[in-house]
Length: 359
Image 1: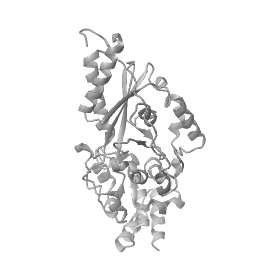
Image 2: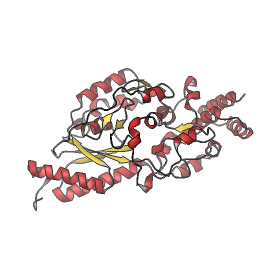
Image 3: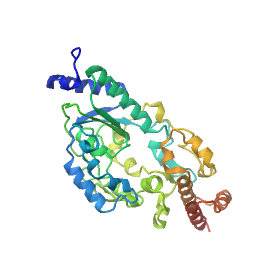
Image 4: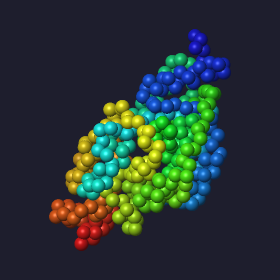
C-alpha cells in the first residue's frame, strides 16, 4: 500500500490485494476460513419474516423488535457495503464424547460449544486484532465487529461469503469442516471484492430432521424454536413444556444431536484453541454434583463461560428435568426433596415434576 494512502482512495486492484491479505491475516489469527460478501439478503429476509410470522421464535421478542436491521446490514450500521465473515473451529479432542454421555444418564450433557471459554470474547478479540491490522495497512476505515452480539443474519452472510451452505437443520455446513465452528463478522465500508457462494450439498438426507428429540425441525430449513432443546434450556426463561421434558434426557445446556448425526461432520476438524478445552470438568460431570452448586459457586465456576446465559435458576431448572429423566437413587431423591422448597417457583415446579417421575 502506498505511503500516505487512505482506505477510501484504494484502486480496485489494491482492494483485491487487500482482500487476499485480510484472508491471510485472519488465518494467522486462528480463523479457519474468511470470506467476503455484499449486503443484499432479500431471500433470507423473506424467510426470516415468514419464520417470525409463524411465531417460531417463541419468547425471543427481540427477534421481532429488531425488524429489518437483522437482514439489512446498512440499516444496522450505516455505510456498510461489505461483510467480512469468518469461522473458527471449536470441537475439542479432549472432551468426553457426547455419545458416551448419552449412555450414562446420571451425567450432564452440555453442548460442545459451551465447554470452554466464552467464544464471544475469544472471537471478538481476534476480529478486533484483524481490524487493527487492516487499519495499519490502509489508514482509517469504517467497521464494526460482531460475534452473535447484535441483530445479524450470520449464517446467511457466511453462506453468501462462501464459507458453506445452510443445512436442513439451519446450521452452516462446510464440505471440509462439517459444522462444529463459530461464526463472526466485520461490517465495513470498504468496497472489497466479494467471494462466491457454494452449492448446497444436503441432497436427500434428512438425518438431522429424523434425529431431533423434540421434533423441532418441522421441515427442511425450518426450526420451531419453541420445541428446540437449545432454546428451552438456554434462551427460554419460563417453564419447559411438560410434554417435552422426557425427550430432553440429560441435556442440561443446549443440544447437538442434529450436528452429531450429520454425515458432513465426518470431516470436522478438532480445534487447536486452548480456550475451547473443557473447563471445570463440565464434559463429564455428574448431574448431582452440578445440582449441588450454590449460586455463588455457579457464578464462580462459569466465569467466562457461555453457560452463564441460562442463569442460575435456569441451570437448576434444567438439571431437575435431567434428574427426573435419569435413574432412580436415594441420593437423587434426597437432592430433589431438598430443592422442593426452593424460593423460585420455576425451580420448585420442575423439581416436583422430577420427583413424580421417580414415584
